[in-house]
Image (cartoon, rainbow, N blue to C red; front, top):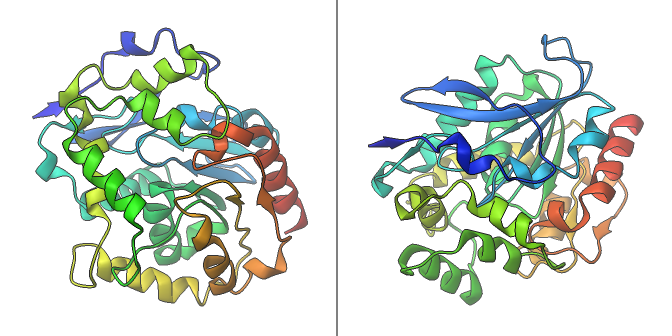
Length: 298
């Protein structure tokens, strides 16, 4: 069964007055918001901002105004997140489904000259797309993310998180996001992260994302991610790796990724301090300034 989130759920979301738009990606609609010039497809610069688990485009609200001064900003909600449609059946969620939906979204909007800004699953899905369709992408900005090809070692903390998300009776998305931030969140912001989830039927994507991470090279998605690793190792366009210093989940992946992408070490060696896994929430304005400066110098 396909579910759509009632628009009334988003009436009280603070500081996010963007009109939602939709792209058909097969049986479902992928929602997105945008800002800046270039909605006619003629943007000199396009920022494609991809969120991760279990957030939505709201996560980028602090960054969008600054980026919009430099170009077109397109921020979709992954399937099962935000205003996007979702399957109620957890078995419908696969790496292939998420990747295909994102690919269709980018191709339908005919996005080009893209600076990919991606975090968490936004990078897990976005980096494969960028490396497999490099003509569309001008730059990469991976943040607190990676490309797990099944050979990586997952921490005990991550395994505990994955088990909890999949099995807990009451999954409070708002508190989950707050727990991944360095700074305290106001009640209305916590509620904004709960907004896309009226009840547990709407949480299938949030519950399944961790389990989609390949644990061996034979798992679904591992081949795509292994190819992506190879292609990232040959990436010749600019790349700027921006990780948070206080993220216990991904901070150890930062240096290996920065040294794997050939052009990444040509950019400043920057950590985002006083920020955790959801660094857009903790330091969005600062990060946006870094990204605009990156675009200007490349």
